[in-house]
Length: 387
Image 1: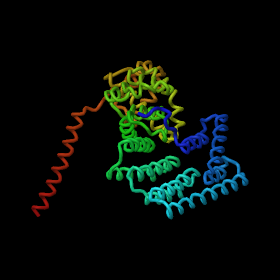
Image 2: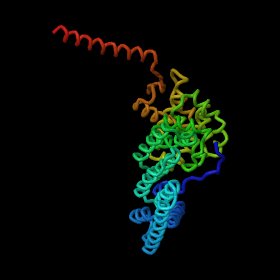
Image 3: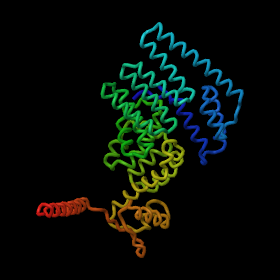
Image 4: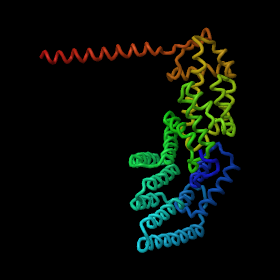
C-alpha cells in the first residue's frame, strides 16, 4: 500500500461530494453555506461554465454575467494556446509530443467540466496513443468523469474497455487500481457481494487515492463485507486483517459496529448501527441504497441471533438487543413476511420458533422436482415417437 497522503482525491470528485451534500435535507444549514461557498470558489477558479449554468438554473448559485464573460474569455484564451501547441507538435515534434498536446486539451475540458468535449478529445488522444498503460490512464480519466456525474453506462463500458486492454498487456499496478474502480461501480449499483470481493482483493495494494482516501476505502470494504461474507470469512478477511485494524478506529463507530456483530454483542451493535446511519445516508455512492442496506444488515444480525436457538421468547430477544418487545415484534413480522428470516412467531406464547431450511432436504426436494419434470418430458417424447 502506498503511504497515506502520497496522493490526493481528484478535485472534481471532492466537488461532486459537496454538490451532493448541498441537496440533502439532513445536512445542517450552516454546513450548506460553507459547501455552497466552496462550490462557487471551485467553479470560479476552474472556469466550470457548464456546471455554473446548471447550478444557476437550479437556483443553487446566482447568475453573475460579468463572471460568466470573464470565464468564457479565459477559456477561449486557453483553448487558443492549446490548439497552437497541438499544431506546433504536429508540424515540428514527434508522436509523443503530439499525444501530450492532445492529452493536455482533454484534461483542460475535464477541468472545466465539459464532459462531452472531454470524452471527444480523450478519444482523439487515444488514437495518438500506442502504449497499453497510457491507454489505460485515458480510461481512468473517463471513469472519473463517469463517477462525477454517476453515469453508470459510461462507467460500465469503460470498465469493459479496460479489461479488454489488459488482455493486450498492462501492469499490475493499473490492474489493481481498476479493481477499486469496479468495486465502487458494483457498490454504487447494489452489487455488494462483488464489491466486497474486489475491495478485499485491493486492501494491500491500494493506491487509488484519486477516488477517495484510504479510510473511506476501508469504510466501504467493511460495510460491503459484513452483509455478504459468512462469519468465518469475515473473521479471516476483515476482523483480523492488519490493513483494516490500522485505520478502523479512525472511522467513527465502525470498529464497534464490526466487533459487536462478530462478537454477538447485540446491544452494542444497535448503538454503533445508529451512529453509522448518518455516514451511510450522506455518502454519495451509498445514499440510494440506504434503506436496502439497513434492511440487509438487520437481516444479518437477526439471523445470527436466531441461529443459536430452536425457540426463544420475544422478550429475551428484545432484552438482548436492548429494545422493546413491541419493536422486535414489528421488526420480525416484517422480515418474516418478506422471507428474510426463517422463523415464526407464536403470539400467544410470545415465542419465536426457528424453521431454518435443511440444506439436504432442500436438495432432495429439488432433485425430486427435477426428476418429475424429466419423467414428464420422456413420457411426452414417447407418445410422439409412438405416433
